[in-house]
Amino acid sequence: MIHQKLNMIAIGFLIGVQLFMLQWILELPPQKPLAVVDVQALVSVEAQKALALYPKNQLPPEKLHEIAMHLKKRVEAFAEAQKITLLAQGAVWGGTLPDYTESVMEWLKKEEVINAD
Image 1 (spheres, rainbow, N blue to C red):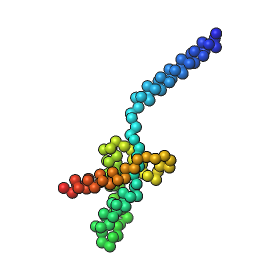
Image 2 (cartoon, rainbow, N blue to C red):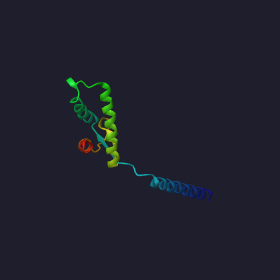
Image 3 (spheres, rainbow, N blue to C red):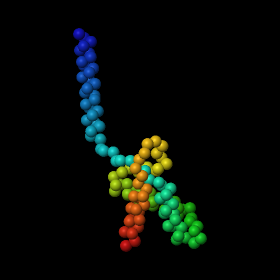
Image 4 (tube, helix red, strand yellow):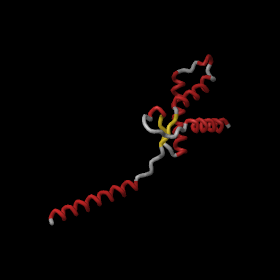
């Protein structure tokens, strides 16, 4: 009889904990979808554009760093606009995620046209 009451109390406690956890999970903000981008390809494209501006195609290392930091900010703005979280393609070791490299490149081109006006 006492064991039955203890079992019922334990079951009631576990159900209460599960309901509390469910409520907590439902109140969490939704997670942004994950996607990947080929960082090496993006940096290569931006570096080629910068090389065209320098004599003898010699890009100073400081300028390459500056380009990379500016590119990072622009890609972050893209991710925020798309409401996604972008990972470097090489950082994903298992599973598959959508590749946004082409979309980011197109967005960067459009951004350059807007900024040129």
